Image (cartoon, rainbow, N blue to C red):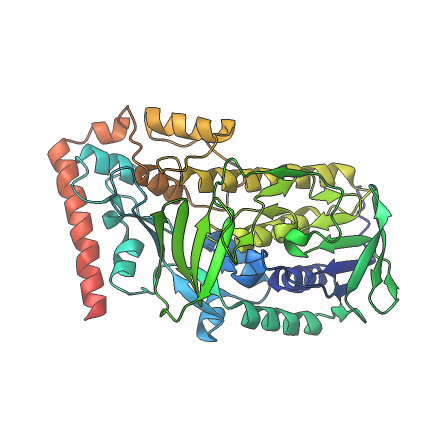
Length: 434
């Protein structure tokens, strides 16, 4: 019989939603364990803490934290996002969209293959109800949106739930961590006190105030835009996020801010360093959120990754030296998910004026899609398969070989099916908006 030795004391360092979510999650999962939140500054580059966005893949973890999407939307903590529009981003300048949730199937064939068989008579996103509804400014009840989260309200809500779950607050902010490559022996606080814990969680964002010995692999060549300039914006919320390619980068509007991302530094820009730790779990230190992986600014995917990391940590509970195999498995799976997100974001740039350096894994994805219109399977992915396909199609990629099922459908039948589908979604959006 295998016996697990759970940590008696968990210390979580950080000051944003990622830290409070981690403290709450561990306190809920291990009622007999003492959990302490050690305050730390939230860096400007901590996008997961400052502009949290939860893709549908993260909604189950939010619900597990007693923050289900419906409640977050009802209390104004979240606003819905259905899709993302890309302007001046494709090789021919055609706008394209990516929905946050999968599209319903059609005629038994993969939707994109049927669309191609029909001769692509309209933009691919016209076949997706979420994209059509979003363009009409609507949020249907039967669509699961991404969630743009208000960072302050989310943090305050998670902090309240954490207190109710028994999470304690350290007497002062973190000053420094003491330890070696084998782990952390104590956290020294600004008031001279110290905290000793069996498991130390670094949720201090890209500052990595604790996880300093895990080794960092940079992604600068894969994700070319890593300088961010923000200006206040009073733009009204929309179910669509819009990104526009410009010289040396792109512009967008996030909640409360107009954004310009570029390859080179600009006055007032925030410098980001995309990449991940080689071993987010080492010894008794677990790095979460952007302390573990900084995916860069495109799409604001950092908070979704952070929630996936928390879910994986609770599944495996690698608690240090007594569980080296579980720690290794955590690192393998967390890094696989991070690398998959890196490739997804890098795929957005393949037809732009700033194409990325191609990783072997992204080259395999593109090669398989260009040959057969399919994607290699992945055990760890925070992005829907349909979103991958929409990005590759938006970048101008087309498979050389037709899908056998789609090929068995007469071209005119396929064309009629996709035209009817597009008309169906337009009519539904018109009825909802009337």
